Structures are given as structure tokens and as C-alpha cells.
Length: 241
Ligand SMILES: Nc1ncnc2c1ncn2[C@@H]1O[C@H](COP(=O)(O)OP(=O)(O)OP(=O)(O)O)[C@@H](O)[C@H]1O
Ligand SMILES: [Mg+2]
Image (tube, rainbow, N blue to C red; front, top):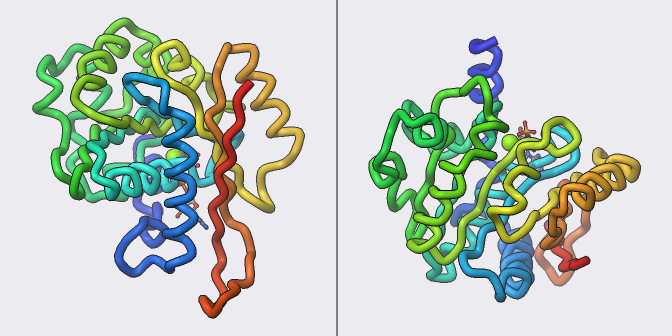
């Protein structure tokens, strides 16, 4: 099992992470998402966005990281937390040490949070990796230690982005509802189905979750205005209910 998880982590691709080489249209789409998210979170303090999706492999981790990068580029101090303690990838995406992380703090193994947070991964961006895979991720996320952690770090960052597992598989994202501002749903074109979205929204309502918006990935789109063609388009829509 551990080997399988390790293999899955090794396969994670870094090519979708925002960088200087990312196409203009993709960077612009993330900036648009950033603007909408800024409005959606305007009334929250601290501003904590949980990023999730309906099903596995829809781009949660990649988009969570890219949103954090885009927000940090605006000069905001940002913390990215890998709270997918079942299948963590942020440390692989960013080539960070994961011998200690969120699970170490929530499990009471480490007391000083600042010792575990990777600082300055990019300008204005710190990262708390998931740590060793624990046997009880949902319980840890629901614990009072998680609440205390968010209260403490919430005072030090303008924005916190939390990567989580898919909501139709496990309820980890929802146990954070009370402790966070809301949820950003990633939807993968050609993969996420309407019934899956409906089920995820229904589960969100039942768990008293608040949806901050949606990001649609994997869109085929012919570029206009001389930017050539590009494969992935990111959309962000603000929706409140
Ligand atoms: N915009 C994109 N277009 C195509 N493939 C992508 C895109 N973003 C990410 N991927 C690829 O899709 C796969 C899943 O991405 P990612 O790990 O971000 O998804 P996830 O929803 O977090 O998955 P999991 O449910 O396993 O946590 C990875 O191989 C990643 O490289
Ligand atoms: Mg993931």
C-alpha cells in the first residue's frame, strides 16, 4: 500500500504548475480566478479556502497550488496546506521534505508549527506539507488541534489554501467547513459528470458548507487574438447560497 502511494506521488506531474514559461492565457485565467476569489473572501478573516472536487484526479492539488502561487504573486502572504493526508502530493510537486508536516502537528508529534512550515517556497508563499500518512485523517482534521492550528496561523497569513481529497469519496473537506471560509470546487471538463456535481453540491449543503466558486480545467479551447491555441482554460465563477 505504502509503495503504491509512493508510486502515485512519483507520477505527479509538475508541468501544470505556474511558472515563467506558462502560457499567457493560462496565467490570465488564474488572475481572473484570483480576482473573483478575492471578492468571495473579502468579508472573511482569516481567509481560508478549501480546494476540493467531486472525484479523484480532477486537478485539486495542481489548482490549489496554482491559486496559492497566483495569490502570492500579488504580494499577499500565503500559506498552502496539504490536508490530503491520504494521498499527499504537494511535497512532490514542490520537491519539499515531507518527513514532518500537518499530520505530525495534528498527531501531537510536533508542537512548534513554525518548525514544520517550509518558508519562502516562492516569494510570499509558505507550505505546510501533509507529513507521514496517518491512519485517521478525517479525525485529525476534525480535531480541536486543527482548529487551534488554523487560529494560530490565520493570524500570520493573508490567505490560506487547503488541498483536500475528493468529496464524493471521503468527507475530509467537509469536516473543515466550520473552521474555514468556504470551498473552491475543481471541475474537470470531459471527466466530471453532472450527477457527480449534483451529488457533491447536495453533500455540501447537507454539511453546511459554503461554496466560494468553481474552477473548470482541461478545457479544449482555440486561442484567439494571436495567442495561438492552448489546451487548458481555467474558469472561476462566484456563487453564493
Ligand atoms: N490542467 C490540467 N490539464 C491536464 N492534466 C492536468 C491538469 N492539471 C493537473 N493535471 C494532471 O492530472 C493529474 C491529477 O492532478 P492533481 O493531482 O492535481 O489532481 P487531484 O484532483 O488532486 O488528484 P487526487 O484526487 O489524486 O488528489 C496529475 O497527473 C496532473 O498532472
Ligand atoms: Mg490531490
